[in-house]
Image (tube, rainbow, N blue to C red; front, top):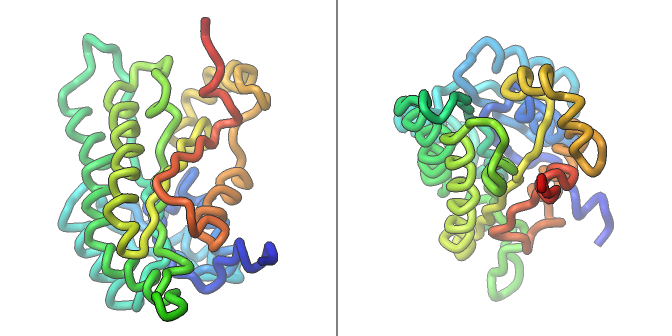
Length: 271
């Protein structure tokens, strides 16, 4: 099969949570510039609307803003209903929305655990659950042959972190635990949803330029680059390539995988 066919996402319907800023915007841009119809959702309505207009102007795909507070189960359900009212199926769900919290061990608040475990982990399950019928419909539309084999499954792509694989240097206890949980949730979903024509995979991302990373990169940017075997941090092209792969026929047989997108920094021993 040729490369344009393998990596084609043209006309696919995609939802990117947190898709208006940072890594989410990089991912949304990759899909729009390759002809997909992308719904972007986050709590910030104005930023969502502006990003959608900018991305649509960029083309050739389109972007639609559907703001929602994804820390709330009711908002996940509402978002799913809005997409179902517009689309017959959802080809790709990118669970990217998330938050972090850094504070010393002795002062780390209980409220941080509630906030991060809810948004970074629990609501990922909630949103995936309520969107499963639309994702299932996408896979069903690609069935071929008498056996009805799904050739292009619905996709769930979770944006994890290398901090869910290694112990981070910063005191982000709830964040790293939530991402480790997300990685395993993805594997559990792969087994549950695979028979329904949906794959679940994770990108364990290293440092990328984003609002969440801004202060860390400002204070320790050169050290972070120097510690990476490739001598740099992630770029929009890195995020684009990984997501286009996981959303296209090139990854149709990839299920339950955690792809480390960090230049190899998580492999470097500190001893």
